Length: 190
Image (cartoon, rainbow, N blue to C red; front, side, top):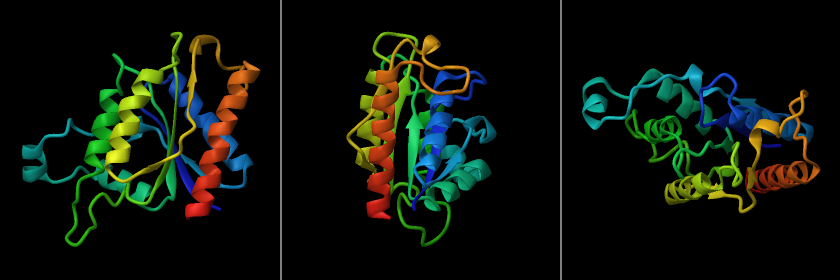
């Protein structure tokens, strides 16, 4: 069975998207695959800057994350929407782990031939849907195989039960379909 990473594009302690990423990890494990939840607050990095990269190299936390991504078959991202796009934290993280830091390292080793699934949760009515468009485009352009099914969970402040599952049956079914397709695709491609 595939090894899959789950993360949220937020470092906030009570992030709705972090709750969704944790739920994804639980559902992935229930499907028989291996899930690794990572919290981006544990991987602090400076804002990407080519001059900084040239003078100091790739940050250690970027190297650690890149190794995690390279050692897994795919990743699930719960992506908060900031002004109709992805968060600066998520963009910066994805940019840093795209950088080569060893001689002979293949380009985009953290992304090429990986499977990804995307979802979002937001207090608003669209559930973070607009931000998923730019994330899907970016990941597709760097060689990630994206599963077509995604979930945008609206009314996020009321979306979760105390046990971390989704309160609305329709949203729960929609999210389960995302996870099922993700695990199935990763299994077939790994």
